[in-house]
Length: 401
Image (tube, rainbow, N blue to C red):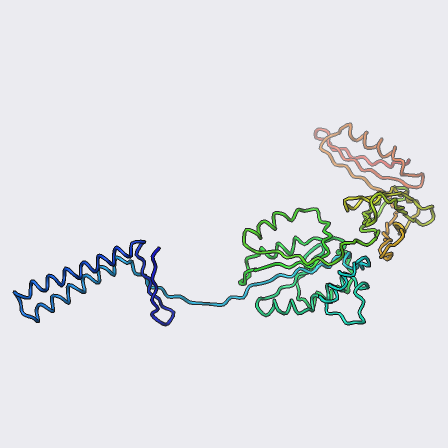
């Protein structure tokens, strides 16, 4: 489009758009002006000089106005307002960030020294991922971003923890069971929140990349890409993964009855050469340990081991699961975890209410009698209520195994 702009001052401009035919309209204006002059010369014989000049001025203004209208004039008033965007910095608070990477090459160590501005006496090979992350939060790069944008820091493990770079740097010193998980989806979801006035212009993730959440972050990343919000990952770690076996999580019932078997589920993190056989032991009070052997996977997945533990002693029973040891384990502190199961010897009371007498009553009684978990000192009292026609029938049975 043929477009001419003329500044009118005070943020005002005049735009002349000829709809792509500006040259034609200019030629038409000149032709009209020539005709007006020719007409003035002809009328000069019939009217006085003053009248002729008056008619010439009026016709010239009309031709000029018509030509100006053909250029489709637009008056534009513009205002400029500087709006700061938000940069969300995701800080990995997960337990894996406490790992030290001793296998860095000399080039990686030198690059890490320059990035963190370490002194000549500092040893970068002894820094944990968590310490590197803390120093990055105090670096000049985040101050440079803060000078142009509003910086919002969000810690993540299992859930998001809003804060500032300073408060999250302090959180890195604290232990939390929720940090057994690593999921940066809450940070991406926060970047999609449009309730805040300042738009999100970018997301920075400080992490070691060991994400173990079950959900797929792909849809969230696609939504951010559709909005033009880039996601930058600052990977903290080494291309040579350290050897580390750990009990990532242990799950079991809070309480069972005496004589029952508790199912204990153990999730393992096995960062070791694929195929390495690693022992897993469950220690229980007053009985011999239970043992299994697991092979380290090649895909980095976390295998799950299940123990069936018979419990015959009443009271709280601590069950300790240990994995390894293996040669070169950089973190022996995470090789053991303990769970406590409460073993009770209470009586079981069963109440059944129905609208009519059924054979299920007899089946229930037989099932309680056949329960092998009951001994001669433990009784189960079953109250059965049934309605037969208009008559109500109530019976109480005391069953002894």
